[in-house]
Image 1 (cartoon, helix red, strand yellow):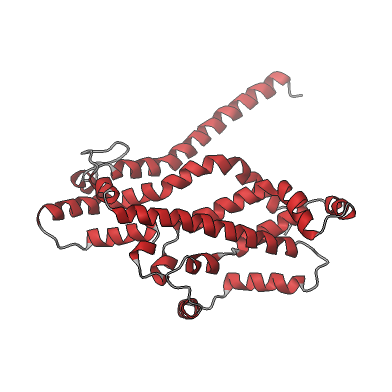
Image 2: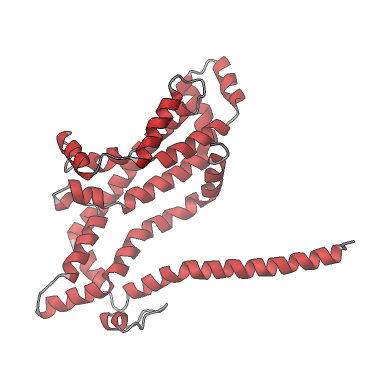
Length: 293
């Protein structure tokens, strides 16, 4: 028969190994970020020689100075914030509306609507037809070229659909008896109970739109409309392909050595700041949305 003492000792051993494994996971996860941060503050020579690990070598701010002194950078950064906020808001509204409709099993044509959504996960029109469509609709050089084609992610749609299906139907029936219509039930009953999955979807969409660059690169011709990801992409291309000479060439060469690290730091930083505030909803939102298929 197992004694309490033995259970306690075994549990302590489990805690020790569990802590050791989790510590290893944290180290492995944080190491690339710390290394990238160190590289962003290191000199060209130190990076080329492979001397940069967790601490900057030949500390410098040349690349940050090059980027921060350019007013176009701040214009593009502002564009990224605007694009991300607007696109995420529209995506959440459309995804929530579509998912709520699909969660109603009595809806006529429900299977067809689900099939249409799932079909788009595996088949697309292709790059050229999409370009012709966006151009034909007059959305080139506008925020809508970024927002509307990506307004609904089918994966996020199916997660939200499964979450709504897991909510007790008795609540909606009681609200309907009290006189609420469909919109009132969604706004006053369903959405307040869906904070976890909504926070998760907001995070998914925000990260996707923040990191997106190809849509803007394809559909926008004016540099003042670029998001910061396109600006940094162009900066990398210009730095690595420059044939300049003199003092300017030295700065460009310096930028070329660590500009990828600076790019990652500047791009990831806002997401790292926001993530802790929605992290507590993240796991519960995904797991609750996975209860039903």
